[in-house]
Length: 537
Image (cartoon, rainbow, N blue to C red; front, side, top):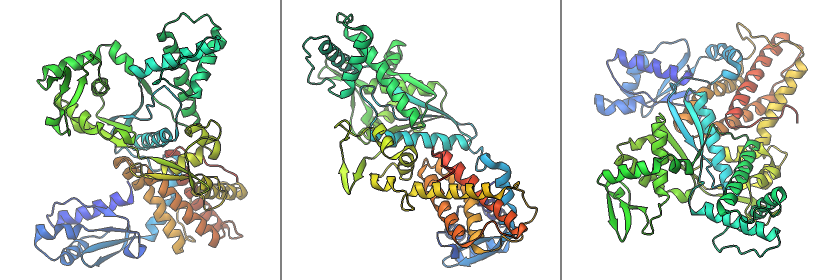
């Protein structure tokens, strides 16, 4: 149980003695002069009890007596500041050593089944920088939710149906014809990227000119297989993997799209206008009604999307999290409305919208790859700054804000670069532990760890459990990235002032346990954001 949770229970017990029922919120003050933890519970009770919040706070404090609390302060206008006992902080150090890689884990998720869908890039090209940001968020959130006890399935939706796939097949065939010495006639809405030429060449190398009479479906399937394989390899290099790949075409093949269409028609919420079939989503919170079938008889993207989400619910998931690009904002209400029309709980669907990324080089926005002359790809970025830097820079920002990715900063081998700074802390500790040459032994009682810098670090270490829970429950993985940077900063400050290995055997033993605990938490935090830190620098 985390310290924050324990304090919440202690305050709750005090309220019970006063016959008061109220949820307790405990926070960690930015200014440590306001305590290690603080609560505004007295302020929230003012209206209920009709009393001065200072008086309420004093009533609550009078009922609290616990060894883990060193001091309680009531400050205006009614906050209760809580200072944790130094002895308690020191004694808890062994818990980190004992739990090691499991430190910070919890079962708060209670095995709730969550489907987390992210990336899902159209298999008509290669992954770009925006996909990298979505991959980082989705993968980090998956790791964190699993760590706190949720049953998470990572899913990739393959958009392999519809007109864009036909255009892909046509484009590849035209490039293939060109390689066979025939005229290439690329359609205006075809795909003109370098990867299309590469696919056509691979087909030519395998079959020479024997496939000239094949229809578009052959080239479409070959292109899909090659591009999807490339996407999977790029993601694997980026340390992002999926449990399930679901094909849009399979929804049609299994009759799921037509089944959903029938149910929507039978719901009484469809109507014909100008030859198109419309769904009355505006009656269910959408800004306007949506077309399901166009007047030419073709299905819109919305219809298979509805079928896909119904399929996820039918597979037993209790929450669906979709990570979508900024151009998909309008999808939120229409999908939720469609699910509600079908009798599903619309609140099961949680759509996260990624904001744009700008790459900055030499103070200016970089839009094109030097290598290809096209949009900068995820692999371009990884090749430029490495997986760790790419993942950390994306991980450190909330996805609902636009971000500038500073390439020059990401390449710096100095403390200005946050990922370098964190890795340097890990490498420093690794070096200390290598030079110790003795078995690390926990102490029954810690006697020499008695300065303020140590207590600040201990408090920070124990925050990890709460940070991970908050990051998972609030779906904000950047909290973990920012936390590990702050912990690294505290270690660097401690290292600059404190000698770890000295002639004093007891002092050395205790400090070695402390730095080992710091390393455990740094590594656990980095693992949750997909970063493998260097042990030597």
